[in-house]
Length: 106
Image 1 (cartoon, rainbow, N blue to C red):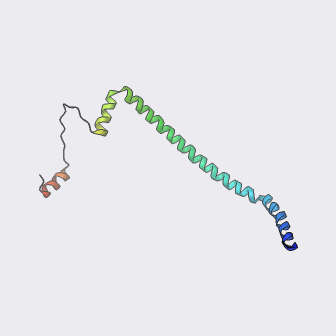
Image 2 (cartoon, rainbow, N blue to C red):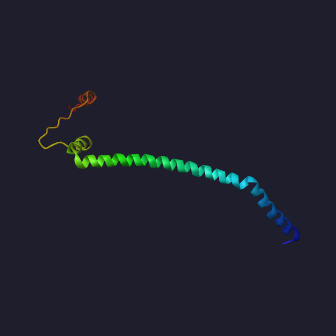
Image 3 (spheres, helix red, strand yellow):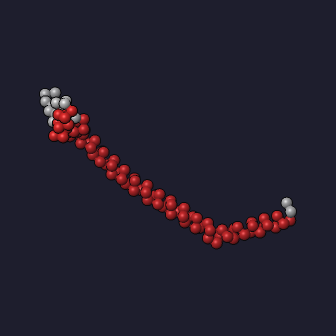
């Protein structure tokens, strides 16, 4: 390494901390802090939303464990279950019936 290279290296080594101390690094830190705060706000909002959903599900679990009427309602609506002594009638919509007549399946 020549004396010129050493001199340039020494000047650069002295110049970099002076520039960095004048606000370059704090600007980057503020940007990182702003991103971190935005991420934190988003996570906290998600956490609140999930906490509300957990409360809803827990209430549903309590209702299902104590209310047979609620169990039957869900079985009928979501699973389409019926009691053994019930008769199920399937009704076609008017549009479906017309399509079936045209196709010759009625």
